[in-house]
Image (cartoon, rainbow, N blue to C red; front, side, top):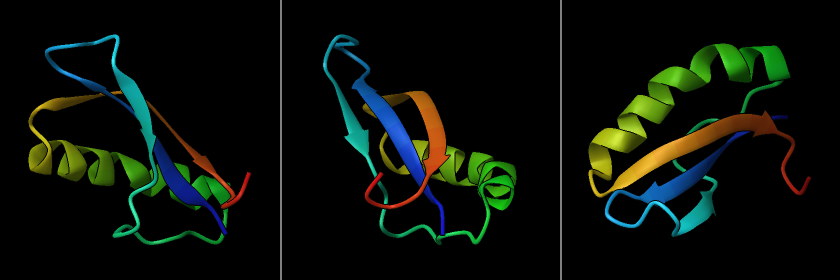
Amino acid sequence: MFELVLVICLAVRPDHCAIERPLSFERYPTAIECTHNSYAHVVHWLMEHPNWNVRQWRCEQPGA
């Protein structure tokens, strides 16, 4: 299983970043499916968190 991992930074403080693993998003059986479907989830997350920017995102296995 693979999950979406976001590197997020505050819009007003781009040097203040964190890693977010949104639990509300589904997990995918393969890295390809995760990568293919994650862009929509990234956009959705950004719409719900307007004070943050997504600097990077990736798919990885939980606990990795």
